[in-house]
Amino acid sequence: MAVEWDPGQVESWQNIDELNCPGMVELPKDSSAWSKKRRWDFFVGRWCAAAAIDIILGHLPAAIVGMARGGAPVWPVQLLGSITHANGFAAATVARKADVRFLGIDTEKIPDRCLMEEIKTQVCEPDELLAMADVIGDDVTAFGLIFSAKESFYKAVHPHVGRFIDFKDVQVSADKASGQTLSFEPRTALAREWLRGRRPSGQYAVAGDMIHTACLEVAE
Image (cartoon, rainbow, N blue to C red; front, side, top):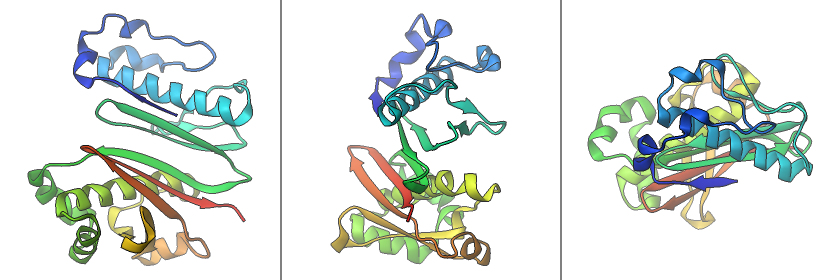
């Protein structure tokens, strides 16, 4: 489930302080101190999540998608899901735990070169970026794809490992022959421990100035 809007218009909207959708979305008690943009992003992301749950279950659950202390969504017990929002776009995906072991999605705006140069050493290795650029065609889009894919990986794996995952714990690659498919390979001993016997894969799409990625592993 996905929704798009003009992000430049949010601050001019008059009724964001009154957002309410009983049974689908509840804003946190401290959200009155949030900016309009943050309130709207949260609301529309959780609305997408509730709509996706309705599609999967055929009804809305008794408990809506909650929020953990760190801000991550808390899903109904039989489901896994992921939410993303960026630059006027929000989406959510949901699956049954019986069908999917890992699930994470992310959307990012393609960064400018200055931002890439500032943070690329924190996000990926030089060989990782070169290989992705060979597939994608330019290094800036390739960097944005690596960043987004690792965010999707984090969202998918973090609920299972319960601890911080560094960008460089895994390497992301794409194969020209396999279409828009991503592979995740552990680069540290800790990551190899997390992924023992597991091989999450991914998908990506580049649409205009936006990159969309997903990481998942189907349950056996």
